[in-house]
Image (cartoon, rainbow, N blue to C red):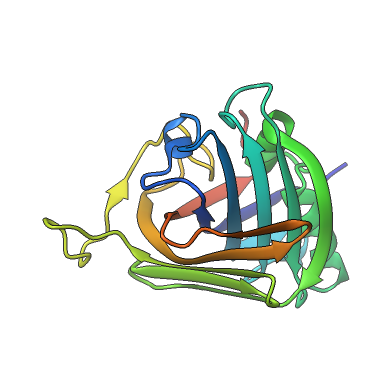
Length: 214
């Protein structure tokens, strides 16, 4: 039986879609299919007695169609923070693999397809305190970077924020979502190879636990 767990942290992504990413609105991707980088940074967390503070997980994924449709599945490869010890690695795989309940399990049951592999690697993930920028890098295989979206009536001093999204990748109740444009989104891992700089990026704070029901 899985341990009781809880996590507070940040979700970021960089994808193929135009801004704003339609998937977050419960709609199909801009071009009908999507390739992207997703990443999570745990600010505070525990799995039973195992502390997870500061650990990170990164995924590279691909799917075709509306990811929220029952018959659409996402194939992905994962990178888990190599700084995690054996117990922490096991906990992260249980939670993010969808085996330990909560939102990750709900997402896994509805959307997970083929797992291309799991690798333990150094992960550099940075998020500005004011959400003005975010970035991730994994061992030369994954690079993503973004600055908050600005425009003729918004300087970026106050980030563009959207709440109560109908397709939030970080789950119900997460947010507010902050949109950006990727200056980097390149991947060469798990058989995937792309460069989608100039496309959508976002940051979403989240809070999950094994007690959440969906």
